[in-house]
Structures are given as structure tokens and as C-alpha cells.
Image (cartoon, rainbow over all chains, first blue to last red; front, side, top):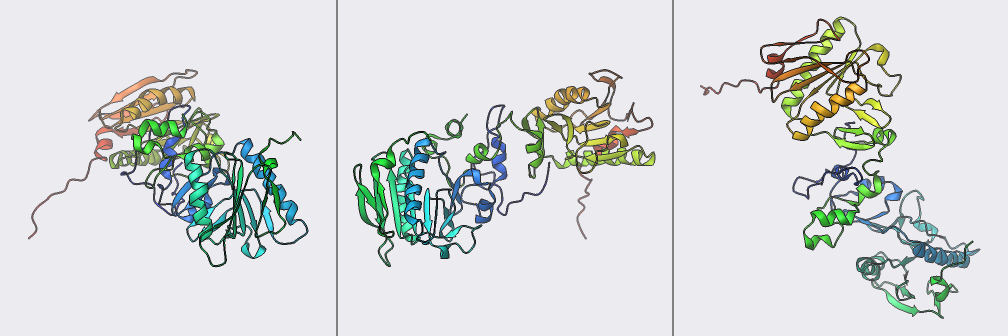
Length: 221
Length: 228
């Protein structure tokens, strides 16, 4: 098999880290050399990757989401169900937890755990949305993931003009609701809600999420 | 090994913390996009879209070294010799790498030069099952020598390929191996050196001048006479 490389950007130069030879049982490392190095990815090449790669795009770098756990999935399901229940019949827009791509900047594409957006943000449903109105992230384990969800994305989502950002933290069993004042580029804290409390929204008046219920293991269906 | 374990093995300690950095290869893609070595199927292998020669050996990808100018020149010389003979006698078709030849369920090789009788030409867009004669030009690396001289010798014999030419620029020899009827191992027809003429058992009348073959791989003589 020897066909033209289909990507726009060139493969890493020899100066980048050498690729180890793979043996039986290893991942096929050599194939990594046929892709661009981190920092050199074009958006088009990123979009060509298959959906199950589960990476976000950040200024030429692919940022990989950790493989989801059941705990993560249960929390996301609970949140999305609550959100969808609130939106029922109101014809405000759409919500999903299917890891759709949200454009947060000209060279940045994120996949928040839960997304709500108004229709005008989705001129082309087969392409990434133009920002979002409300996003939720369930904080993953590890210091790197915590920093990313608590600090980095808080900054990015505010700059992207996403009105509301929910940080759902299994470690502290809290839901932090951040709201973007008109014209601001940094979030203000609407509230930090713990077990026994109900998380509420500024954007979607009437949305109420039981914090304790959010973090319990659900009954088998 | 996980991505993290591999990185710990090859990274310096300060980078081992982060999975990937600007300038680093994207290691995660090996884990998320492709099967691990041993799990590759023919179907997945044939979907690969690379500018690199890759063979599939029992579920494992083997990456063929990038050929040198000399290697390619020798391959093309052999191709021209064989093609001219085959065409003159309308014996079948000749091709060069990278045409995948199927040797088994998850086993494909891409010999440097391949001769196929008409009966073996595959229908439509599929790849041939086995071949009638193959030639391999040995590359510099020790892995490739072993692969061509030993491993492929066994594989091609087991696949019933009637004749196998090993063309070795290092020793400047052409070894012609022939498969006796019903055998599963090659017998040596001859080892031909400089000044000699390599002949074929399968294709009577095919001759290759060994010296001419390796001369094809040499850079042309350049006279550096001063101008004017």
C-alpha cells in the first residue's frame, strides 16, 4: 500500500521524537509518524478523524478526552435528562450529551459533556455549532483534567460567549453554575450547590437539578 | 503497553507527566485509531492510506524500509528485463511493489518484482492470491536481510511461489531459488555473481547479466573536466 498522504499538513520532521518500533501486542506506533505532530494539525485534518477518536481541537493540537467511565456516563445522563425535561414543549433549542463539536474560537473546537443551544447557532447540523448557550462539564479524574475543566475551559467558554457554564464535580459532589454577564468576558458565580441543594440556572429560569440525585448510582433499568 | 507506559519508557522524566506536547507525535492515535499489532485484519490493512510500504504478516504490520535510489534502480532494471521477456512470449503480467500479494488470511507481502500467469490475475480490483515468480532486492538494514533471505524464503515457498530471486547488492549476487513440485522449501538453482548470467527454471530463456544488474544501481560516471 503506497498512496499519497491525504493530509494537508506534513508529517513530523526528523527532529521530533523518534517513533519506537512496535512488536506484537503493542499499539502500531509507526503509524503515528504518518500524522502531523502536535501543534501542526489543521482543522480540516482534525475533522477528518473518525468520531470515536474523541479528541478536541485547540490551535493545532489534538486534546484527548479520557475514555468515559460509567460514573461519568450516569452523571451526564442525569443532567441531560433534567435539561431535556425542562426544555420540553418550550421550543427554545436543542440539547444533547452526544459529544457534538462546539466552535469556541476560530481555531478551537470543544466537545462539552452536555450542550444546549438555540437554533441560530446551528446553520449546518453536520458542521460544528457556532458556540453554544449553555454547556456542562463533568470533571474527570486527575489533576490535569481538573485544571482543564475548572480553569482552562472556564476561561475559554467565557471568551466564546457561552452564557452559562455548569461545572459538575464528582470529587466535591458540587455543581457550580457560572453565568456570563452581558458584555463580560469572564464568568461570575451564580452559585455553588452541594448535596441536599438544588442547582438553578440564570439562562433557563425554572431549571432545577437535584445535586444529590446527580451523583448517586442509578437503579438498574 | 499503554500510551503512558510507552511514553515513560522513551521520554525524559520531565515530559513523562504530559501525554503530548507541541512538536510531539500524537501517540494517542495509535491507541484510538488503529488495531494493535497482532490484530490487524486484511480488510483493515487494505484500507490504509499511506505513503509508506507496509506488509501484513499474520495480523501484524511490518513497515518496509524507505528504498534507496540504488534499490529502486536495481528493481526497475529487473522489471524491464522480466517484463520484456514476458511480453515477448505473452506469458502473463509483471508488476513492481507496492502491489499486495495475498499469501494467507491476514498475510500480504509486496515483493519488489512480481510475475503472474494469466490464470492468477485477480478479477476486478482485488489482489492476486500468490504469484508465479517474485524477486526481492535486499536493502541495507540487518532486519531486511533476515526478512528477505530467511523469513520470506519460507513464506514464499509455503505459498507455493514457484521461483524466488534474491538480488543482493551487498554481495553482488543473484540467488535463484526454485520450488520442486509438491515441496514446501526452495532448492537452490544457482547463486550467480559478477560476470555470470542468472537463469530461470520457471521461465526458460530468461537471462539476467549480474554485472549489468548491479551496474544499473551505480550513479552514472561524471567527468568533472573544467569548463572553457
